[in-house]
Image (cartoon, rainbow, N blue to C red; front, side):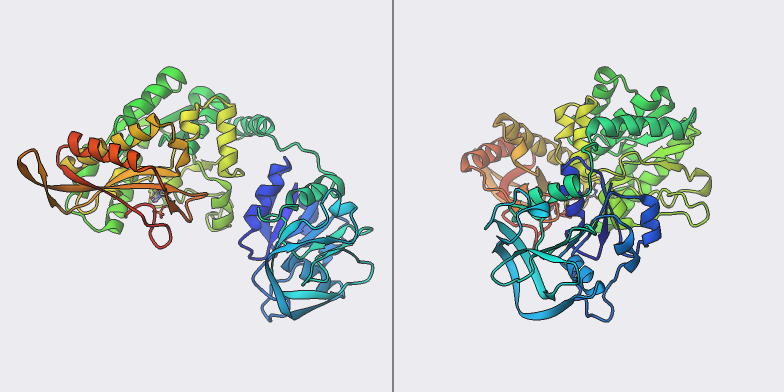
Length: 515
Ligand code: XMP
C-alpha cells in the first residue's frame, strides 16, 4: 500500500488513482497522520501531496517530522517536496518567477526516480515558492528553465521530491516516474487487481455478515447493481434487494431492471410500488429543493415500512465509494461504537432520519473503490455492459427534469420524449459519446401550428453533455441531423409537445440537471 498524506491539494485523489493504475493499492490520509500511525499501517511508500499553502504561512500544514526516520520511502510532490526540504534543513523561498503550466524537464540524473523518463519531456508545474538550497545528503535529479530544483533525491534515505505534478495528464513522463517510485523504490508488487479485490471482498463480506441478513436498496445504477452481484455471490439468499419504484424512472426501466435481475441474474428483487404515494406527496410542489426534500422524506418512510415488513435485517448494504469516504472523512462515524452509521443511502436518499431501532449496521464493500474500479469489478463478476456503462441518473429521477409541478400527465410526456432521445442515440451507436443525454420538460407553453391546427403546448429541452466526472461538463456538438430527427419524432409522437430546443450551456455556469 502507498499512503498519500493530503495537504489540501485538489490532486490528492488523482495521485491515488494514478498509483492504483499501476495495480498498487493506495489510500489518501490526513496530513496529520502521525509517524506512529503510519508505522502501524506499514505502507511501502508515502507520498506527500501538493497543497495551496506556502511552507512559511503561519497556519501551513506540517507533517510529523518523525516520518523522515521511518525508513519508508517518501515522495514529496510540490508543496510536499518544499515541506520535506524545509523540515530537513534546506531552504525554500518565494521566487519572483513562479512556474505555472507546462515545463520541459532537463534531467541531470537519469537513474533511480527518473529511469526511463525522457530528457526534455513535458511536466506540469504550479508553484510560487521554490527550493533554493537542498538539505544535506540530497542531490539534484532534474531542473527546468524557471525551477532550479525540479526533482531531488536522497537515495540512501529513499527521500524524493518533485516540484511538478506527475499525477496530472499534462505531465507526459508522470506515469513512468510513478512506476519507478512504486515498483523500484518502494518495491511494491502489482497485486491490486480486480480479481484480487473480488476475492478479498467476498471473504470479508462472509466474515462480517456470518449468517445474518442484509438489505440492499437497488436503484439499477452501476454501484448498487455491482453491490448486488458481489453480495449475492458472497451470501446468496441472505441478501434481500429492494427496489422502490417512486414513479420517476425512465420509460420501461423498472420492469426491465426487475426482469433482468430475476431472469438473467437469478437475484430476486422485492419490487415496491410506491408510485401513487410519491406522486401524491409531491403534488403542488414547484420549488426544486422542496421537491428533492419531499422525495427524500418519502423515500425514508417507504424504506422504513418496507424494511420492517421484509425484515428484520442486521445490515444495510450501501454503495459508498472511495471519493465519498475521502470527502466525509470521519463525520459518519458513531462516536459511541466507532462504527460507520447510515447517514445516507448512496446518491441522495438520506436515511439519517430513520428511527433508532432501524439503525442498521452498515456494510460498504465498495468503499475502497473509485468509480472506474467499480465498473471493472462489475464487469468481472458478470454485470452486463448495459449496466456497467450506464449514464448517471439522479436519485429523484424525472421529477427534477419536470420544471414546475410534477403531474401524471407531465411525467408521461417527459417519459415518452426521453425515450425517443435514448432510442435515437442508441440507433446511431453514440450512447457512450455522452456523459448524459436526456430530455427536460418546461412548465410554459408556446404557440405552434400542426396541420391546419394552432397548437399551444409544452417545449422539451434536449440536454446532451460530455464530462469526465460530472463536476464540469460541456454541451455536446452533435450533428444537426440527429437533433432534427429527435425533434421531429418528439413533436410528432409525443402528445402535448410542439417545440424542441437544444441546451447549449456548459457547466459551469449551468448545471447538468435543470433542478
Ligand atoms: P448537476 O446537475 O449538479 O449534476 O450538474 C451533476 C451530476 O450529478 C447527478 N445528480 C444526481 N445524482 N442524486 C444522484 O444520484 C441526485 O440527487 C442528483 N442530482 C444530480 C446529475 O445527473 C449529474 O450526473
